[in-house]
Image (cartoon, rainbow, N blue to C red; front, side, top):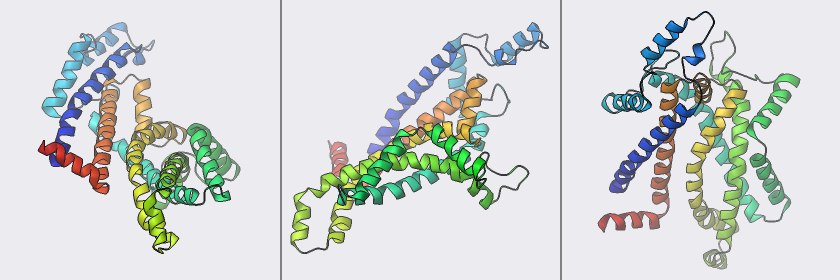
Length: 324
C-alpha cells in the first residue's frame, strides 16, 4: 500500500505541472492585467508603466511563468498578491478555514441524511417513503444553489427575520460560536441539500442491487431478522461503492462553495477566488488553482486508500501489483 501511495503521489506531479501551465496560459489569454485594473484619470501613464515593470508584466509570458515556478520549487513560495501585496499563502490560509467549515459541515450532514434515506428508500421500494425520498433527491439535485440560496434568504432573513443573510458574524460582534453557527445555517442548508440529493440516489441504487443477491436470501433462510440482514450484510456491501462517490464530492462541493460564498458574503476561498479573477491578480489565481488541484488529487488518493481498506479485494490487487 505504501508503494501504491508513493506511486500515486509521483504520478500526480506531472498533473500538477500541467494544471499550472494550462491555468497560466488561460489567465494570460484573458483580456486585461493587474495594472489595467488600476487605470484612473489621476494616474499618469508613466506610473502605470513603472508598475508593469515592477510586477514583471513586460517580460515574455514564459519568463514570468518560469520565475513563478522556480520560486515555488526552490522556496515553496507562491509569491505575493499583485493587488494587496500580501503573501499568497497567507491570503489562502486566512480564507481556507471558513470554506472548510461550511464544506465539512455540509458533507457530514449530507451523508448523514443520504445513507439512512437511501437505505430505507431501497428496502421500502415503491412505498410512499421511497417516492418521497426520490422526489426530494431530484429536487436537491435540480434546484440551482444560487436560486435555493436566494429563496432561503428571502424567507428566513427578509420575511421571517430569523437568520442572518450574510457574513460570518454580526458587524461589531465578537464572532462567538453561537454567532458563527447562526450565520452558517443558510449556506450549509444549500450545500447539504445538494450533497444529500446526489447521494440518496447512489445509496438507493447500490442497496437495490445488493438486495437481490443470493447470500441475503440465504441469511433470511437461516432465520436472521430482517434488520440484522440489512444492517450487517446488505448495508456494509452496499456502502462500499459510495466511498468513491464521496471522494468526488470534494471538488463538487468546492465549486458550489464559490457560488454560495458570494450569495451569503461568506469570507472563504470562493470570495477570494472571484475577487482575484476580477482584479486579474495573477499570483493569487495561480496559487488558488494549484491548491484546488492538490485538494482534488488528495481527495482521490484518500478515496482509493479508504476503498482498499473497506474492500479487501482491492487491497489484494494492490499487493499483487507491488509483487509483480
